[in-house]
Image 1 (cartoon, helix red, strand yellow):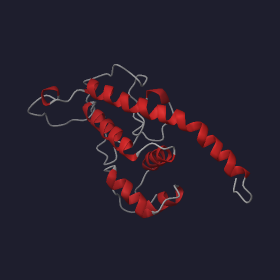
Image 2 (cartoon, one colour):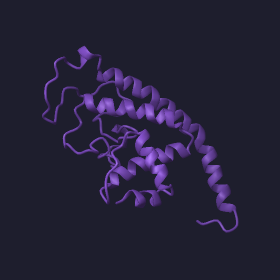
Image 3 (cartoon, one colour):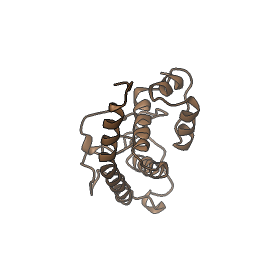
Length: 176
């Protein structure tokens, strides 16, 4: 699909969509090159924003997820949207990260991940990731802190959202 088609599906302007792409550092594709997974990611971001989760919080958890995915060597396809390709998957929901929807293989929150899997052939770095300060378990703990705050915010907001939906549905001429 095109960016315009995604904007229409999400009831947002193309300008707004372009802003999301820039802020979340998503690749801007040409023509009808956008996948359903790309749309699913944007749907998740818009839904969370609608439910009162600050964009700054989403940007921070997105940065953590991408760093974690890099440490786990999740880029096995070489796709420019490799970090979005799991979006929209519905199996094993408890094992998936919030925005990328990547399946960690263990329930989130988790205190362990299977480290050292490298599905993509890459050049070796001069120093190991740990020597450069990267640590998947540390990132996972930071991720879980943010995820916990988001869940708490969503649980607090849900009764108000349900009440708002009920109120809007009672308005005359409301589309159902």
